[in-house]
Amino acid sequence: MGPSNTGAARVSGVRRVKNGAAVLIMLLAAAAALYFGAVSRVGKTTSGRVRVLVDGQVYTERNIVGGEQILVTQPNGSRNVILMTENGFYMLSANCHNQDCVHQGPVTEDNYMLRSLGTSIICIPNRVEVQLILLEDSAPPAYDVPDA
Image (cartoon, rainbow, N blue to C red):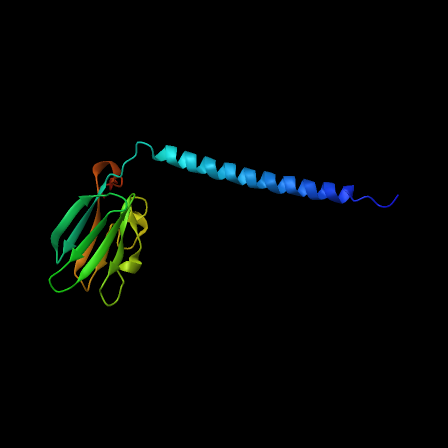
């Protein structure tokens, strides 16, 4: 009798089972994360609004609706496009020369306290400011300053 290949086959089969089990565990973990993420969002609506100012004057103010765009066009040809997300917005595009407003990133109810411009994105060349207006239940807590 010659050497048997059954040992090699068993090792290979064990590896396949281990790899399959690892893939199954990862899929179950991903499904659980999606489920619990969705459950945690049930009943939660965004409590903010987006206000757009052009040259210091209110251009529009709207409730945040994820996926909705706001197009700001001016008689001088200036153009800005704001895209609302689930809980905020970002400047999708602008025809200004420096594109700083596009690179300022999103403003959300979760990150505005960490941003240098807080609740705003500003396009200086086009004179456009976009503000996240927080409603009472999502506003940051008020801090009492002790009297000196």
